[in-house]
Length: 275
Image (tube, rainbow, N blue to C red; front, side):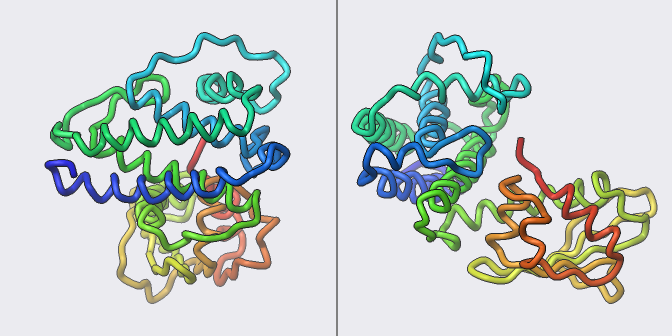
């Protein structure tokens, strides 16, 4: 266990999700590794390769020297190009090779996290492009990312579960931080207005995004008596929209809106917070 208890929450959440991924993919036959996921251009194998690659970078392993093919339509910018290297280099790997590497990575990374003695606020090099972040934020984002990809795999393999896991709670908090940008900036909600999100299911919460006189948004847990819009939806739909896994039109039947319909649709169109 790490010497800093506030890091342990994220380590435990990461551990729960990474072990769930291992349990999901270990029994798969070769063909099942090729099933498409909601991540553009990525199969089950590709999602697992991405997770392995990022965690290996967190371990300090050198990045593979690899030239990407030119016909990868889903590689559209430097971030996606950076992430694709760890994925494409493993596209020829067999199922046993994938599960063996995943298992070995989990052993190494778990050992590293158990022995973590650095302070939460220490600045470290992040896994994508070398951006700096605090150790605490890096571990928080790893728990978030691994849970999101666990859910990608579960949907592709038709094995739902863990929507209320420890990492799901971390994901809720990460996604809530992005709501002011979605409502105030991207959807351009009117000044001095409020938007309520009423989320039910395995993870339940109600939050109000208030836009002040300067157009700046903030999130609070207190209700609004006269919101411009109220959006009611289940947790899985909320997470899929916020993580860019589905378009609003595809889940319109799972979202109830009250109030200004134009603003509601603008919020749903701009809901995605992930690259």
